[in-house]
Each structure stands twice: as structure tokens, then as C-alpha cells.
Amino acid sequence: MADKLTLSVIKADIGGWVGHSSVHPAVSAVAERRLAEARESGLIVDGRRGRVGDDTALIMTHRGGGDSEDVHKFAWDTFLLMTDVARELGQYGAGQDLLSDSFSGNIRGMGPGCAEMEFEVRPSEPVIVFLADKTEPGAWNLPLYKIFADPFNTAGLVIDPNMHEGFDFEVHDLFEHKKVVFSAPADIYDMLVLIGAPARYVIKNVRRKNNGEICACTSTQRLSLIAGRYVGKDDPVMLVRCQSGLPAVGEVLEPFAFPHTVAGWMRGSHHGPLMPVAWEDDTPSRFDGPPRVVAYGFQITEAGMLGEPRDMLGDISFDRARQTALKVADYLRRHGPFEPHRLSLDEMEYTTMPMVLERLGQRFVDVPADTCD
Image (cartoon, rainbow, N blue to C red; front, side, top):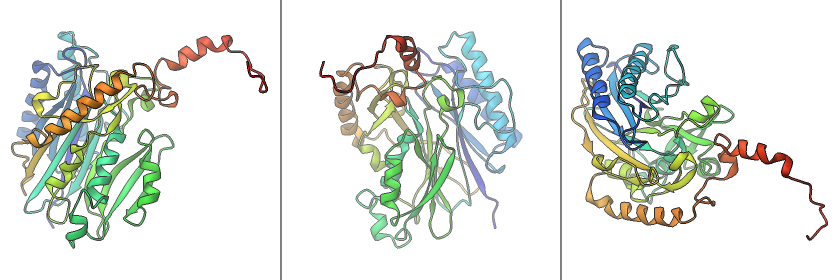
């Protein structure tokens, strides 16, 4: 049996250029230099630098398995070096995702987002790495449901005998730190009750029902739940394997033809459309948004090489989705500070809202239940 390959994508907001809109070339150069050094040393098999908005992602293949201390330490040290350059250049929010002063075995719970999956490489192994900015981990719930459970999106669920049994979804409760596994299609209705509330319930991974093989995984870190305050949006990542008994590349991309509404955008406190964009358009600036997603496509070799990435959402067939997203953005922006553009109060507990309510506390007086005045 061949050694399993691990695909790790670890991302962090190291500092924005300008504001929260992009990453300075000098900061990106640090990541690219470090990845080249890691390849030469043998720590990783291959690595590429990804970007969306003001976030940098380290996309790496290696043989160390999930939660590899060496790989996670490399990512942490790389982010620290990038932060040093960002601070020298006066970048905005330099190092804001680094919530600890020291590394403690792996990067989970320390601020950076992380998604990893370990698998035996097939003779042809297409994988798509999705990076989102100005949103939260639950943004992947709807696309993952459509990819792996909706036959109106994924024809293979009906016509491919290797997919006909369906898939298992592992869903995490981010508040109670619990998880539950749903089997699709049998448990679809129960699953939708939870994943339809993406601020709390998040699809962590999807596996083949018959053998447990990993098909997709996401980052589930919520910075506000780690730090206890608003320190920036979570900007999640998602990895999806494609073809040969799994959804085809086109089926994996199809959900993003609909720019569904997600939480995040300005100050992490607003709803907005998740706009699919080409790499060159991954720089959110209008009201620090709208939220957006890019896709890096890789054809991983049996040796574990990523090769050159393809811009999977840059295709003109997503132009109409982009136009729809802009129309939705116009509509929501006209609400200003009113819901549903602004998040509900229970989702704003890590912003300034609790301080406002505390300051106003003594000004509230009881109203008799039977009064009409």
C-alpha cells in the first residue's frame, strides 16, 4: 500500500494592503521563499502560496499526516516572518490572526485556519482548494450540501453507480464543541435542520459511505470564539477531491454559480453575497467586500506534486453569478444598519454591541404588561 499523502492548507491574515483589501507583494514573497526552502529540505513534497483578499494560504503536500507538528510549526514560523515584514511596511492589522505568543504542538486554536486531509493518491487526482474572504466557516455548508447531496446539482448522484449510495457528513457544533455524522440521503432532512444555521453548525468533512474515504474538508476555526472578542472574520478554506467516483470538477464548481448569502463583510457584522471571482479580482474593497471566493485547481501527481494551479472560478461562465452578487450587494447595502443586512443581535455578541447594551442598561425601565401606551 502506498504511503498516504497529506494535503494541508493553513491560512492567516498577516496584514492588509491597503486596509483589508489585499496582501503586499513583499509579504507574499516571504511565503514563497519559505515554501521553496521547505521543498528543498524535504519537509514538504510540494507547496504553493494562495491568496484571497488580505489572507495568505500555504497549500502544501507532505507525508507527515494530519496535525504534523513539523508542518504546523513551519506554517507558524512562516506567518511570524511575514508579520515582521507586514509591520515594517505598516500594513493594517499585521498578525491579527496570530492569537498566541508561542507555538504549542499544532496550529489549531491559535488563530490561523487549517484544513487537512490524508489520502492515497489515485492515478488521476484532481483537487480544488477554495479560499474565502470576509465570511465565516459556515459559508461552505450550502455548497457542500449541493455538491454531495443534491442531485439537481450533482448528476453523478443519480447516474454514477459509484456515487449512488451517497456520502457521510460530519457536522460540528462550534459552540458546544460536539459533532454528529449524518448519512445522505437518509438523514438529509435532519442534517438540514442544523446546517441551515451556519453560524453554529458547520460541515467539517465529507466521506464516502462505503469505505470512509475522505472527499472534502473545511476549516472550522472561529476567531471570535477563540479570542472572546471580534478580531476579524474567519475567512475559511475548503478542500474537495473530484472525479472517479466523486463529484466531477464541474459539479464541484456549480454551487458557486449561485452567490448565496453569507455572514461577514464589513467588520464581520453584515450579510452579503459570496461572489465567485478570478484570482485577479480577489481584492475586496467595496464596504470591505462583498465576501468572495477563489478556487485553486490542482492535478496532484502520484509523487505528491501539486503542479501549477488553475484559476477555476475565473471562467466567463461565472460572469452572471458575479453580476447577481453585485445586484444583491446593492440591495443589502441600502438597508444600512438594519437587519437583515446587519447580523442579528445574537450573532454580534463579540462586537461593540454588548458594550452599547451595558451602557444603556440603567436607561431601560419596566413596561407594565397590560399597558397600551
